[in-house]
Image (cartoon, rainbow, N blue to C red; front, top):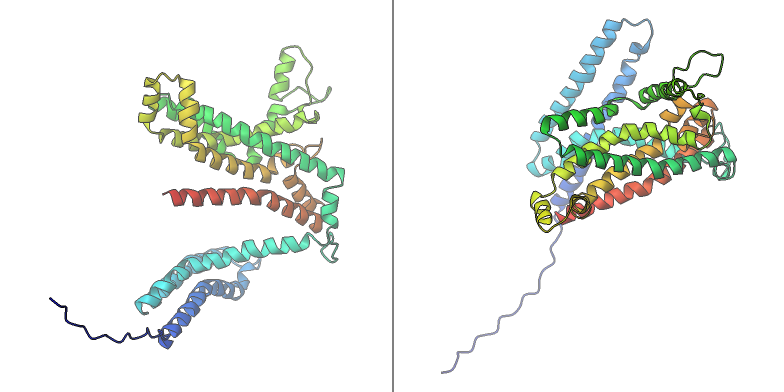
Length: 384
């Protein structure tokens, strides 16, 4: 049986898809509307700033200031957002969906860029200028940082802080999280509340508290009111000026930050420990593992990502700390750190160039930690 021949069909070559001018115009219009909607509120805020300049005058009635602030700051901004939402609602659906996120999140991004990006760029430029910012000095400020003893001491102390404080805070927080997890519900709540309580205190407040712990009065200047020296006097030994002991005084100041950060580490790590599958723990115990082996081989690997997040968070906080040193010693007795030195250069000595150079140094030191965190978050998102 023969198959009937089929007449060949001429193949039609694919035709290039021509770009729709209307679609291109819509895309351009959407982008213009996105930019415009993001700039509406910042522009209105600038207009309000100049329009209500009279409110900054000292003789202006305080009730009038409050009334205008509430009416404009609350009612006016709400009215702007409501008006933009109504305007977007009447747009074609495709354009409206493209513009809406920019209308609501765009103003915040614009203001964030103005208050963060602009100062960061300006600080970077100032780091290459003289103390008053009038003369370009190149790398002279950075050369001083890495050659003069004052700044080298600050760098040395900061490095010691970022090595010891995060490790000790995370280890103690992990210990408290593990032990509190074995308590009854009510006892666990009370214990965690007491350990977390220092987190409610500012760094300045905590420094004031610990000043009464380390306080020292030379002979003839009254009784010892510092807790440690009161104990030494009560036991018949001489009081000690704790803050003036070289190197050790840095450790005594680190205790304050560790005291503040242990509660944070404990709460985060406790939540991670509770998320460890109970089946794995019970299976390891059935296989003969003791509590230390369960903790080391089951619990710690399961919360490794949380440990890294807590450690990097405390590390960044440690790099930026200046309050404790500023309040306790003012940077004296070789206790200065980079952040404290930066503030001192800026606001005490009025040296904008050196202060900016130290700020850039801090940024460069923190940047790798932020990059590591971002990469870890991206890896976790891919695994999900």
